[in-house]
Image (tube, rainbow, N blue to C red; front, side):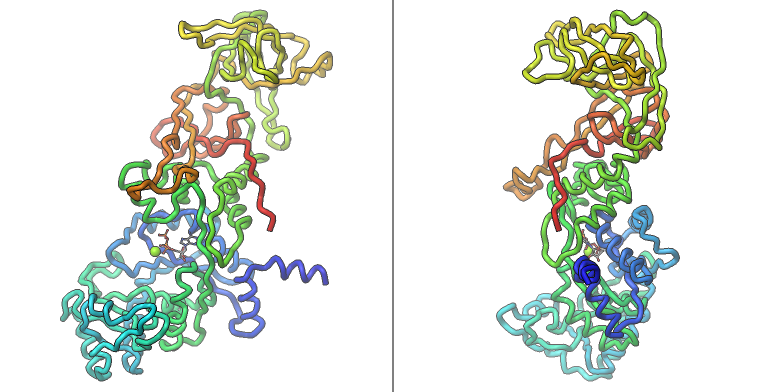
Length: 558
Ligand code: ATP
Ligand code: MG
């Protein structure tokens, strides 16, 4: 009994609704879809919708369709179609051959509109856009009937056909549903079903000058494909009565059912195609895949994995209430995913030299370094060690602050995978910046030698100087710092001036020279990094930080 209860409790409201439909025999299977409009790149919010729909199809042994909602001929581009397909595939939502275009249903939609006219449920209206708005009424006042509402079925059929045949100019006539101008739901006040637009469409060319409105097209698209559960976001809740009206009156053997959930928003970043597009158009970011964005293309370029996005979507869950998820939750998920999967390598972002005065000049030895102490399966690598090394500037202090455990004159630390070294002195430039630290090493203390003579408190990472690989590193912060407000007074986004820091000459262990675009690593103490695949394709070696190693973030208790 306890077990059934836990299972039931862990089901979200969408699964509960589907369970009920299956038990009641409303449907005997589950068919879902993801219906993007190809007018931009997909972002993390879409990823949630994709994985939700795909996950339900999988869980119920049903089907999952990818359908381009390409009914609006003005804004859509084939560039976006290709990018969206790639993103959905990368996320792991396998649509197999179930790829559809809403524009392929234009004929069916037209026939269904004719059916509505014949049933006396739709009419051609000559009111202008302004007049239609005025007649519609407000939230507190009912609307008024259009004077064209009483046109005969015959006249409506003739006019609608003429609209299709290009007889009328854009904006001169529309087809409207005949529902109820006094409905408390404004969406039900004789909504427009079709508008005239003499525009070419990327799929249907010049075949049509009559295009369906979303509220009419979408339910028909779902019904044609035999979708059972049409899952959409909360802003369509008020449109559901119209969705139901359309599927009922256009007569389908198995009408689909719409279920709404809350959109995913993330703090400190820009979600929403419109806003992302503006940043791209203004050149504030370098394209739709700029690693500071949360488009799927950007996340992939940054080094996020499909598994980390899946984990994120799972931990966020589905809800009926709009809210913002902390960006740190996404960071937590990529850290969790990568920590056992990736080798822990050494790279120095702000290098100074460490010279080991008692190590033989010109000698290089190779040390065995385990790739990931928590995951022996990742094996080990051979690491060059010599008299001159690079270390991080902040791993040495000439005059240590209290509790400082790293290098300072007289103090001994462990060089990771190597020996103990004791700092002796340092050299400085004219400005007083440390350039070289001198130290001595103790050959007895070699890592893996079983040395137990004494212990040291600090361990630092390093890179052998003569074999070091030099490459650019990029450090990212969120595009927006919400603590200072999302918008400026003039309505523009309050951008974080530190969202990109370029480190032109970081030094790394030589093995990183072999990295390919898209390969990712943990750089000891500095975070997880990915070799930027876009720059790699241009022949540039740039390692971008995916995420730092530490966070105070804790997964919220559900
Ligand atoms: P945007 O508001 O970013 O422009 P959209 O809703 O216009 O997005 P569509 O291509 O029309 O984008 O959406 C495809 C699907 O993705 C829809 O089912 C939509 O509800 C869903 N979706 C869009 N944004 C989010 C989000 N932030 N969270 C969850 N689902 C989303
Ligand atoms: Mg949209």
